[in-house]
Length: 439
Image 1 (spheres, rainbow, N blue to C red):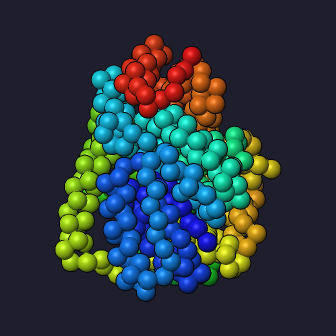
Image 2 (cartoon, one colour):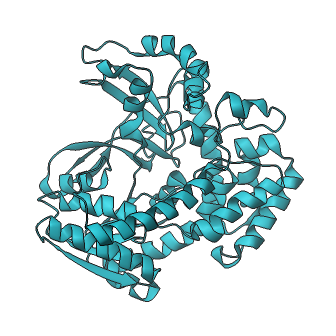
Image 3 (cartoon, rainbow, N blue to C red):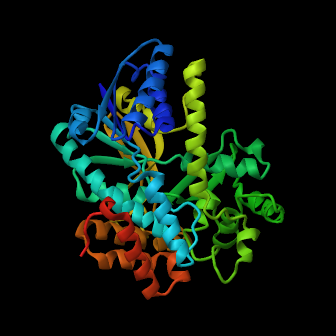
């Protein structure tokens, strides 16, 4: 069996996911094909993973493929393809996504999922993933494509609507959602045996039900503890707790992410909100710089001291592959098209995040029904942007990029239409060859 990792220069993530596969008896004998366009980063990943493979008993085989000319060979005959690419990297593209909007007075925290940063990231990534899809349709048409790259709903939704590649979008925010909430509210005693239902869209899927092992609804107690945390100036997760106060439910992704998915918290006319809600503006650029420095240090230490023992992570990828290969049922939260209205009050063409059953026959999304109307409304403010960005990528029409930015909750609440269009034009010009031509 062959497992191909696209964007293997994302060494820490490749180490986690391929390392997880090496922990599985059903997967460890696989050929692990590493693909990247950066030879130095690819070599680092190969070095680490070879050391891990030997430490795990020497099972399987690692192959490396560098550059577009070797991409088909990397994919040829693969059963599973993991996608973790970042088109344009931190420098220059992430820097551009933050610095140009900042000149127009538009501030961001992460900029990889929604907002003007998410829109631009999608537009430069979709053409590359479409090239992957064309190659896969030719050399591994039956492979399962496991997408980890953001913006999740835009990229996965495009692949699911406009290619024949079997695609599932994966994020780790679902499996840590209720765990994080209960721990930060000092309710660890409720963790064991809890039952939950999570559904919505990626990074804004709602914790619709949370019950303890005896079936007792935990939301009343959760709500009673919120005020104390909101009053704590050091507490970081205030946006999501504010969601509970105003919309009734907690959601999957962090407060620094969700601060920019709406029109409520990052407002130039209300600068005091940044401190009140502990919103880390420009968080993602800082994180990128720190991660790059930390990886250089860690890589040097690994070369000197050897590879540490890898423990299987919470990432879904290896569990999905193992479930399919062994026909052992497993449940995930997956990003799939809302075909047959899995969530009845969201559009059929939206990419939604719902519980999915995995077994030897593949991935089976579960029917959820309708979300609480206010939760569906919040999701729709994001889905509007996602669908218009996908439309822009499909048609190459500039007007759809403008419309996506205009309808983005944060962008539209801060800037007027003419300014939004000028900002989009500046971003397109700055990204240059990282974007296709729009008309």
